[in-house]
Length: 428
Image (tube, rainbow, N blue to C red; front, side, top):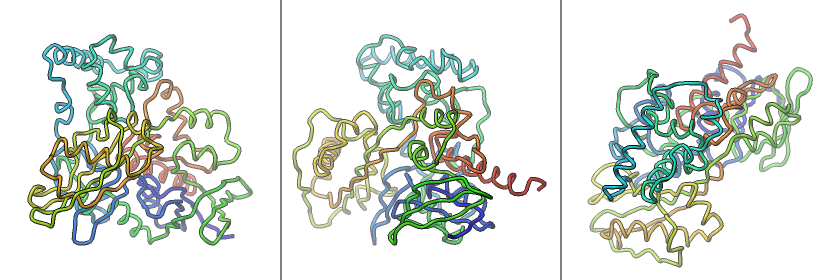
């Protein structure tokens, strides 16, 4: 049995952030995936653009992500394609637009009134009920923005969650807090978002075991045994401390004998499903290609953001990749459909908006994210503080323990690392 000071479960941004801040210790990171980065998965095509399958951009209120990227030497590029995304979704009807604008003023007024997140009016009431009866167009607008930014519709979100979505880029539900900023505007990771994860993994000395699934964590004398399974079979690790950066439902299955309070907290976490369908477009003048289409569902929205996300540069001239995706409501409708049907639906959506690319589509990929964005669903905040609470020598991180984005993942990994250091060096 290998003995480590720390075993980290999960090589997404949260787990790698924890590993980076504990890199002087004897540690091992395990992950069931083929690559590091979790939902920041990306691929840089040879002599071509990069494909993002998950996280795409870094807003100005993500200073810890930027600090980590700078520390490990990852290039960040300015990108303005997501500015005022919500304005692109506004209804065209003057009456519906006036209805939306009045509701946004209500939201702004509510955000000036900070109060405990566990209050029933915030945690138990849905955002839809708080918005009240609306026209179909206005209600669809709020659903679209909440799906785009949080992977949940207004019925699924609590009022607290709705205020968070409509807050300053989901950094806080309130307008009274001073939000730390990095001051460099909106950014993207050059070469694809997972370049950050790769660089952090290198910085921790490559001590990441991929295709290695954590099966069970059990407390024993002087620490924990971790049963893992890799290509060679089952093996055992021993660690003084564990950092759990697994999605909440997986953590429930892996960690043995969870007490009721921790199990209840993890069970309160709900995830939206996402399907990523990136589309690669060839440069102008390349030999024409016609993507073969099959049947797809006529009423499903196969793209959520109007194809806002794409690789930078002169797209019409040089081509590139549309980082297309479907959020929870649409993704659940087609989750079990054949891959080619989902890809075809996305291509049809693209061509309806950009018919000029009909003969330039050279690649369409698909990635299903069962555990995409953790949602601020009704009742979550009653358990929220318990999510990051250590359980003996097990420390928890992940964006569901902080805020549902890359900044939350990075900060939660830092916090877990600080907890580990305080536990192993209490006088330091």
